[in-house]
Image 1 (cartoon, rainbow, N blue to C red):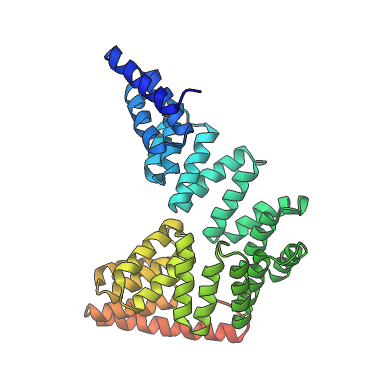
Image 2: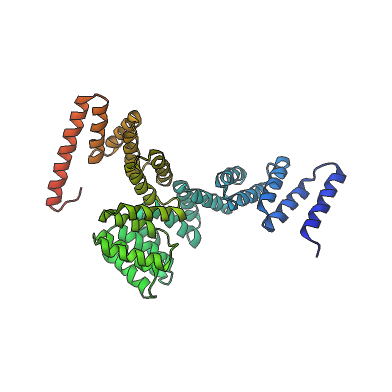
Amino acid sequence: MVHLHAVMALMLVCYAANGQENPERILQQAIVLHQAGQLERAIPQYRAYLKLRPDAVDARSNLGVALASTGRYREAIAEYREALKRRPQDPHIRLNAALAHYKLGQIFDAAASLSALHREQPADRQIMLLLADCWLRQGEDRKVIDLLTPVEEQDRSDPAIAYLVGTALLRDKQIERGQQMIDRILSNGDSAEAHLLLGTARLNAREYEAAIADFEKAAQLNPHLPDVYSYLGRAHIQTGDTAAARLGFQKELAQNPNDFESNLNLAALLKQDQDYDGAFQLLDRALRVRPGELRARFQLAAVNLAAGRLNEALAGLEAIVKQAPRFVEAHISLAAVYYRLQRKADGDREKALSQKLTMEQRAGQSQGKIE
């Protein structure tokens, strides 16, 4: 067998002898390098070929795959977009583009692409599970339940589906149905997934110490289980142990940089430490995962207020109370901004409104209502 490097050297000699670039040979070299795992060498070869053959969809798609495999997701997405201009319905390229958005933390864009693919290929299990995971990360729990419950009822042997459905049910406060998923997972033996779901149920029930014990057990069984450290951090916040909470969120983000709750909650902790630049970075990432999410927008406004960026805080808070007029904390912060801007009448109005809403919420809770 001829050694790969010898083949490459021979090809280069041929190019030099011909005195001109042979597009198909450049492409063949790119493919050989790609298949050999030499992606950093394959990428410039694909680019050289595409300069000569810009309409070559498969080569552009291959370039996107090579770029994504080296973590250059933005560049990969740009190549996939170019390929889709010429072959807009190609499901393979569309799925690869969705995966690149997912890896980049652009969960909204990934979900949009995967939703379209799922409508066209409803039986494709990979697309379905990726879409469910995107929706779960966006907090769209009802969508996850509606998507996967029919599949789970037909195939109760898939622990991934049971876990996704169980997580969505518990988040949606459907405790009894969520417990059924926990029991189903437990029937296959002790597992990290079962303890994570048990901990989630106990966190929802405000049994914080018991929840922490379950989350720690889950992390012990599988330190790489998605969300486990995020939930552990949230449980520690409820007990007032902010140091342990911070550690939990940092661990989650070390292995899952796009976890929404960890970015959001750690940003709030950094704000308390007056690390405003760090908080801004985390909130930017959180809002890429869930664009327009009110809690993230409120935290962003709160960081702007704490950092003295009053105009940015004002614009953010005014937009929030317009969209969510019963958001008490936003009215309180908006009053503080108005007072610092010497707009006393506006501040007094917001302060009175926040007090009124607080009293209404307390009255509703005493009657068994939840605002």
